[in-house]
Length: 267
Image 1 (cartoon, one colour):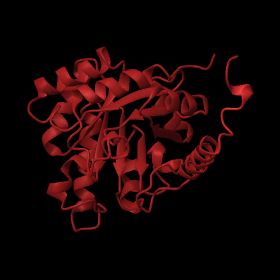
Image 2: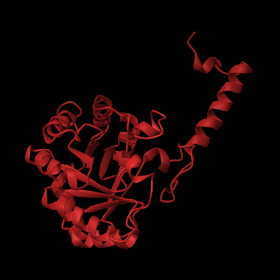
Image 3: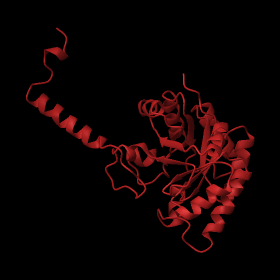
Image 4: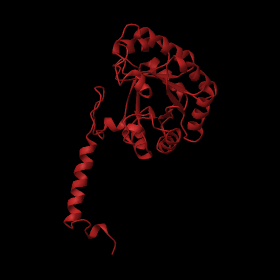
């Protein structure tokens, strides 16, 4: 049986120079496949709003939906660490609400940690959640829940002063007790500096090769997403074509009365 990865294992991976592979999953079947394939962290992302629910953004995803998807994903994960996103308005109202929401993701969803998008206003929330015994991954850089404030999905770290703001924020997250930082769409030079500055590991998405790990959305990575993808997504398969070709063949065989043949029914 493979050793279960815990939050304390990831700092050791950083120290050894072993990269961390994180990927999203939204159901038990995909979770079991990616877990067996060797990923280190399975993230139940609020990106399910985009890739599962067909929404334009993540803002409509509810805490109950995150709990449901996390719970079913947990049934497919044995080795990887399981993290769940805290959706919009599950932690912004108050630290007390944040602790309660995070606790529900662990108690009801069977998550092993939570991830929340952090700016200066929510560093104390990170501290409060982890002091309640709930491990926290801090998400900095491009924060999809703040898409309307940011004016769209824009690369971060390009403006004067951005470097210092991001560095200070990442340090604050570490001091508040986060065990990992996700760095999204930050220019590679700044992401590299953040990674070198922290004792805890960084996991990048669109932030260059120098982070301690990488994360991708599974639907994007396997070629299931039909919409245009960000520059940082690499497609390792074309599952959408496989599904389409298989379905076309099935439809044709049903129409032509080829399927089901006698080997596929009971007599």
